[in-house]
Length: 282
Image (cartoon, rainbow, N blue to C red; front, top):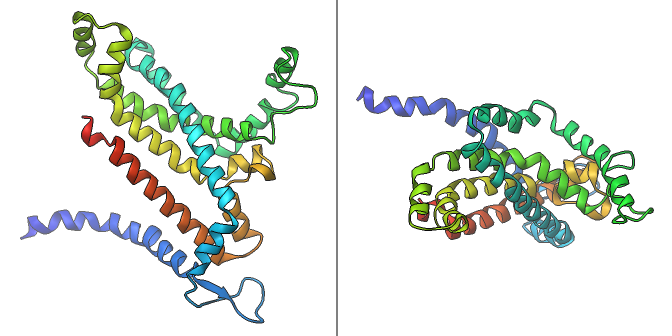
């Protein structure tokens, strides 16, 4: 009997942590999302009226920011995948003794603040950085144009900040591929592209799925990059939620937007996993 209870007892600390810091806050967020202002009350005073129309109103008012958030997150995820896949492949198969050094360099950005890394990109893309003068000298960028406060800057910042989340799962998946399978493909007269398409990519798909999820989910809710590198025209849904909470003090709308974002991401992730889930690829 004691042996049967032991696993459940070991789960108690983790469950207590999740209950305290996840389930309870989610429940509080849910009840806040259906509140309405108290008639004649001060700013920030609300009462529970179970007004579900808060969700519709919040979405209709901010549907542009929702669309922009998912678009930016999708582009950043695609760019991160294009950068991270060759990098992870090179580390796994070509790095040799430098493998551990390169892995440290991949995670090195985590040693500094997310905020500082984003501010650094503002300087890199600013007038005093090396990119803008170079593009102007090549005639690609006009004298009056800038890269900061643009959608380009926001997407580049997101791509950079979330790149390790894409690289590490890809490396873990590619590193498990037996090199002999690639050699066998060559023995069967497959060229490099065919080997990649028929062998390497399918075997690394668990890492692709994990990496894209770990990149897309936080990118969709991000607000730091848009706040520092963007402008009012590039505002994402995370910026709206932050503003509603701390500036407008509109807690019900902020809570409704948070739940709507969470539900939208959950639906998209479920569809994605069903279409490209690892259960069909390993």
